[in-house]
Figure 1 (cartoon, rainbow, N blue to C red):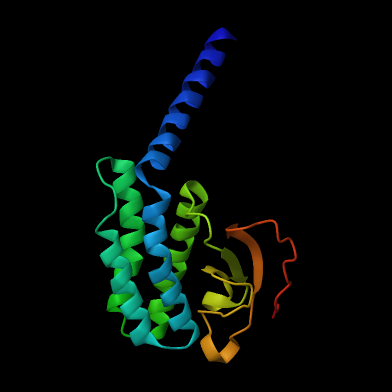
Figure 2 (tube, helix red, strand yellow):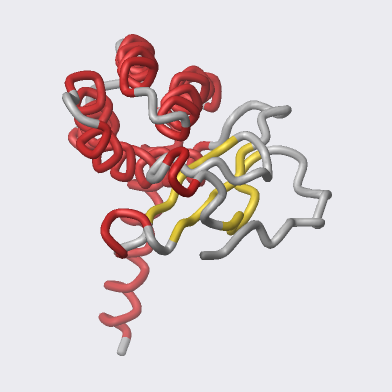
Length: 180
């Protein structure tokens, strides 16, 4: 019984060290430099504008040049953000850009959840159950009015706000959005 407790304690300390390394390497200020280009991609894809999505992706990649490095864990997180942004920058179709944006959105949500962003940045997690061929897709946006990057003008307001992930969370009046 004592050896099991020792193993559990050891694993707990190891996991805490891994989480701490992630939090120490990435700072809210760095994450904040990614938010604006990410949101520009979201807005461009919502407007069916591949060219502007590519510009946003290139700006995102430029911000990634300031990313921390040094450990396998940190380098893995950096690559998880870099690869989909590069795919958007090089996309030849909206469909390709939107697939990569779904991956980027998942990685950005995770990074923001673990690291945060500076005060004053409002971000909401939105979800469309019909996106990506019915698999559903999440994205971050700066306000509560749904602007769907996966369907653009075809179904601009399809989806709903799931939760607020950054900013003043005292406002609990979350709209249901439009669920299709």
